[in-house]
Amino acid sequence: MAGKRRHYILTETAERDFREARRWSLSRWGKELTRQYFSDLHESAESIAQNHQRFTSAEHIARTQLSIHPVREHYVVYVPITGKRIVIVSLIRQTRDVPAILEASGFMIQRQLKEIFEKLERGKIPNLKG
Image (cartoon, rainbow, N blue to C red; front, side, top):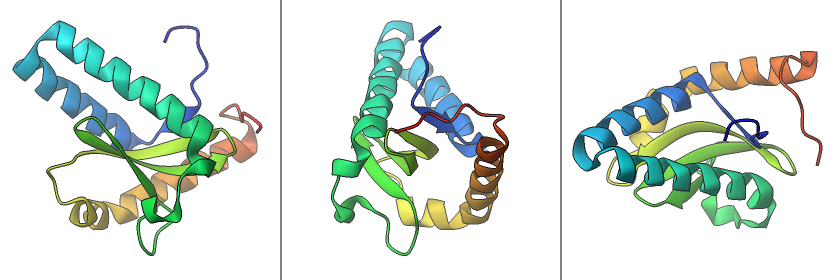
């Protein structure tokens, strides 16, 4: 990933989710399988960013601006921001209660999204067009 421009932005919540998932994965699967799993997550996030406009409305979470996409054992919860860029707001294991988790962290997610959108408007985060 070094040197490559990502087509997704992580909120603080998503960064925390990824760190926790990595710790859990390392303790359960070891270094090599964890590396491959997170490589798959990155590739899937890139694919979601590049193709999110093709997904059906059924993949949107009711009454929110959030969309969800399964990736291996997790759901990537995201908001499209351009034709080829997303903000990942959370990474949730598929065995967990996704609506309850999102409801509990909804205020924080909205605040983090607002901060990201403000940074995009001020040019503090490069805005990929398209």
